[in-house]
Image (cartoon, rainbow, N blue to C red; front, top):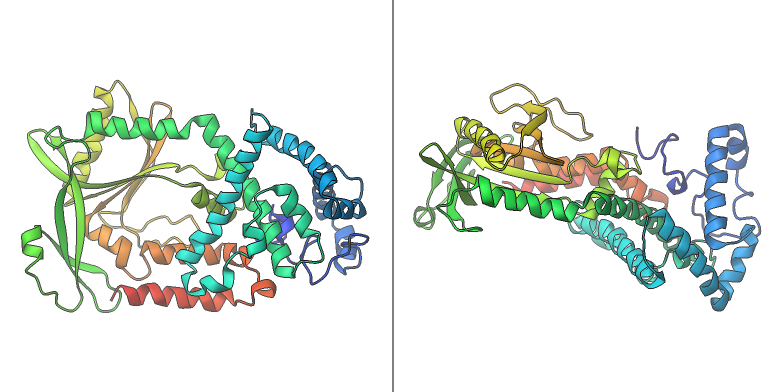
Length: 432
């Protein structure tokens, strides 16, 4: 289900819905003059959603009707009085067990996360249109949800500014839900414990903690889709003497070691904790407000090894390392396409040609997503046309409707279908 369709749970963001942002707004009749009223009355579900959101607005601002909002816009003292009640309600909503100052600080953190969602897209997937989608100064300067909500109803502000205020509120709400979940499961503690587990039990004692060995992948790629056809591991000294031929690439890997029997096996490892902005985007893609349901990969590890046999040894080594630590490691949702076959792509934008070993490892009460590659599949994951992760990010952002959701055409005058194709071509040209 697209985040844009009529069944989307993000009712307030639809530009063809009851809370669409238009050129002008009147607090005496903010919505009733629109043609959608007749359709709204004919759809009981949409009517119920509208009434629920309207009630939330009135409760948060402590008003009885839309026309009362103008008093808060014009009277700062009254607005600050109502802010106290709003912060109390929001603190209870997100289980912020703290005083007014701490609650205000936490809400500011949610605001920072909301802004970072747009900044992330400006810096990567939509970098070529960064100037078009930059947040308005008036909105980026506001961290308080009461002020953002009042800005949305303030006709002195331009349509784009009022839309961005509403969008920021929606993103802040998701950021708050994510923060609440992270505090509930102590995600920071679990991340540190996972790193310590790897250092104490998985990596070879022959290297100091954090120590790496440098290696380079010298690869050759196909003309048509830049698939990796051959790859060799070379050392730094050899790499400095090379002159690359067309369709050759040199990729640096900083590798650790793990011990399998008497053999030390090199492995490149990237351990990550998904940041809040990435989680917000995932909730939007999944058309979901509950991070417990949609974000199942908070902790993750990507590993790259020289061969399929080394991959098998590493998986066995993980289980043995966990046992030494007194933990029974169980593997869940296993998908293995390193030896052929197609990936059962379920997420929007995924490619069935992706080669990797993917599973979730449950270590005690911690669940970690593992993605394991050989050198060849790792290079395809970054460079092969139709498979690369950069292309995947483009496809899932646009095909899920999130790009249009965040930057509707009637606000930003951007054709997302055209931009999608441009971005796909841009990432492919970078790889040749």
